[in-house]
Each structure stands twice: as structure tokens, then as C-alpha cells.
Image (cartoon, rainbow over all chains, first blue to last red; front, side, top):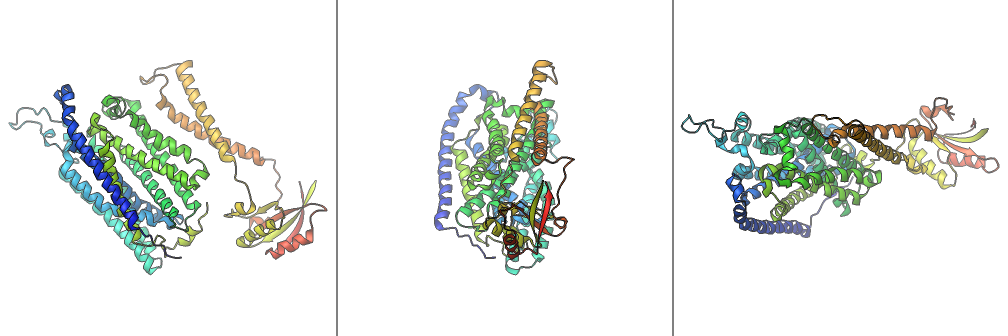
Length: 428
Length: 174
């Protein structure tokens, strides 16, 4: 088998930088607009402000956007490693030809970790209500007067949700993920040079270990980074829900990257059969996401217990119906659209169909994360404007630069993988 | 009524696939190929059209979905309205699980029943096994002989030149 080296031209790289530049310009424009209209809004909502609702400051909106995009892109990068690990443990042969793409997605993880840490340290109070110390003191300083701001529910969660343990967990997740990513990647690259089945067997063992780590950390990181925004609320489905959202977005990125590389003349041996399998993945896990979404929704809707249903009230009629359109768009774009479009065999084998659906899914799941995070923090001040688009463009640009740089570091075809021949002759 | 067939016996999958292509290119119509296991890519080589069963499945599923929704809305909304858990009579989220189950049930049963009808699979079916070795380790290519049209010796040569290890003739009661 021959090597295939990806070459990212200066022109392509410039496009990524242009994307970041446009993002920065939009972001600054958005911040200026928000900063100027912020004071006006506070006046306009004088009554609301008096009742304790302050108009959100633009920094809060910025932190929320950083957090939202970083959780989204970190999840996608993590899914890259997860996909490779699953393929190893399943002894999969078909995916060998496209394996380098999910593998390279993991290169974003260190950046994701750094941004996550910085955003939490700078904007933790804006993102997480539970980080405020005053919630935990039952009495005021004199030790007798009850603290009006004391929150027994949040105080009860203090053993898990406290600043230091949260920070330690965050660092631990990234250290573990990056460790396993590097370990798998190093084995894969050494296999290219040395050959033999040693690296393959070793990769299976590493993957199995990673899956155990991932099984725990994907849920706990979802609780930490997304669920704890709505501190009073909890859902046992939530870890799965965030995983499903990450997983289907990650699959969409893998599929889209394979198609774009193929259309630019790379991955010559990838054919409609590989695309078909990727299409099946995207199709199936769109349904899986809907299944998890509905499992969470229906039980809460049916039981109708106030402390549970508040979550969906905030997203439907509550907040002045501010999030209603996203709530329904979320279902349409992430379930109905891929379900109906990718249903036929032919659609899963055509690049154009897969392209349309995967792009829609990527937008849809960004909106999904938006819907998870914004109602609990920005409330009615949330919007999708220059700040949101700008931040997303910056993150997308950075992700694409690290991802493509990772792709260029090795041959796109893992030349010495023992199942390469099987993948070349893959037929469905 | 009996029909006569020429059977080419093969013992190699790749030889068989190549033979099928050559035989079809020579203008001979292949009646059927029997193999002990499914062979990848044989549908394309034989020119077998894609099954239309998925279309049946879609419409059966659509029927199941419509039926389930209609049934629940009519029963719980109009025929015998009941208050359950303080929800409206027509409470769509509560109907989704039943709708899902009936969609799957109708699609699955619809496919299986259609398959049985189309292939005429039934308990009284008599199957003519052209060559018993096709259930073990040989591949059998059957070509129908039309009296006065088919040149059997030419066919024999064609099959043998394409790697058949044996060429037999067999009469089958149809």
C-alpha cells in the first residue's frame, strides 16, 4: 500500500486564518454593540432590575460563548479518540482507511483544556451559579442571623461541586484524555514505520483502558461542564444525553472531513462503501440522540414535578418563550432532517447528501449545546448575534488548523495496519 | 412440465465471479447461481436488481405510525376521553412510545409478510436442489436449456473454458 501525504497549502491555511480574523472582527463588533446597548437595556428593564434581574453584562455573554464552543469542540476532539478506540476494540476492519481522520481530531484536546481552564478561572462565576461562596453559609458572619442567600440544595452538593474538586476533575479529565490520545497516536505512527502486529495488539489494550476511562469521564464531565449550570436540576440521563450529542457531532465531523479530503483528491481508496458505513453511523446515532432526548423529556413531562420540569419550562414557555424556536428547531434539524434524508441506501452513498446532512447536524448540535447552557445563564438576554457567530468562527478556525496540521503529520493511509487490506476491499 | 438445465460446477469463488461475467458477456442468460454462503459482489455481477423491500418497509412503517396516532387520538380524545395524570386528552408525548412500537411492528411484519408473498415461500413449497454439493463446498451455475435454441456443446465449452470443474445436465420438474 502506498502512503498518502496530505499537503495543506498556504492558501488553505490562510483561509483558516481569515476565518479566525473574521471571527475576531465580528466578536469585537458584537462586544461593542452589546456594551453600548447594555446600559440602555438595564434602564429599559428598570422593574426587572429592581426585582433582582440584572441585564447580563457583555463579559458574561463572552464567557458563555467561550464555554459553549469549547465544550462543543472539545467533545468533538474527544470523540475522535473514542471512535478510534471503539474501532480497535471491535476488531473493525472497514474503518482502517479513514482511521487517521478521527485520530487527528484529538490534537485539539490540549487547546480545549487550556481554554476550558482559563474560561473557568476568569468567568466561573458568570457560568456557574454554584461557585458563589455566599450560597453555602447558613448564617451570616455574626453566626446567628440566617443568611437569606443560603441555598440548602446547592450546599448539599458541596462535597462534589466545589471549586477545588471541580478544578482537579477538569485537569484530570484532560490529562487522562491527552495521555491516551498520545499513547494511541504514538502506537499508530510507530506501526507505520515498523510494521508487524505488535502495535495493533497493544493499541487494542490501550483502547480498552481508554473506553473505561471515557465511560466514566464522559458522564462526569457532562455533569460538571453542562449539567451543573442548572445547579438545582438534575437528570440521570444527562451524561448520556451530552455523550449522544458529542458522538453524533463527532461522527458528522469525521464524515465531512472524509468527503472533503476525497473531493480534493486524497483518500483514493475510500469508496461509497466506506461512506455508506459512515452514513449509517450518522443516521443511527441521530436516532439514538433523539431516543435519549425523548427519554429524558417524557419522564419529566409525565411526572410533572416542579423541580424537574422547570428545566423544560425555561426552554419552552418560560423566559418569555425566548428559547421556544430553538427547542423545536433542535428536534427538526437533529432528528427529522437526518432521519428522512439519510433513510435510503442511495443517500448514504452520495457525498452531496452526506455533506448537507452532516453540516446540518453540526449546526443542530451546536444549537443543542446552546439550548443546554444559555437558558440557565443568559436567560432572556441570550441571543445569536455577532458574538456567537464570531466566537464560533474563531473556534472553528483554530480547530481546523490543529486538525489539518495533525493530519499532515502522518500518511493518510495507515500503511502497516494489519486490517488495511480488508478495508480496501470493504463491500456492503 | 420438466425443464432442462445445464449446470456448471465451480470450486473457487473468484473463478466463479469471473465466469459469471464472461458467460453473461457471451450473451448467455444465467438462470440462477447457488452457493453455500453469500458471496460479496455477486449481485452486481449477476445484474440482480436491488430489492424494493425497503419501499414496502417505509410505507408499512408510515401506516403503523398513522394508525397508532389515529387510534390513540380517537380512543383517548373522542371515543372515551379520560383524564390521566392531569394531562390533556390528546397528549402527544404520551402517545410517542406506542406510535414508535407500532411503526416498528408494522414495518417489520410488513417486510416479512411481503417477502414471503413475493418469494412464494410457504410450508408446502418443494425446492429443487440442482446439485446437493452447492450446500457444501461447490458453487453451481444453472443455465436453462431452450429446445432448439441452446447449443449445449457450445455452452459446455463456454463453461469449461471459464473454469468449471464439471458440467452436468439436469431435468427439473417445474
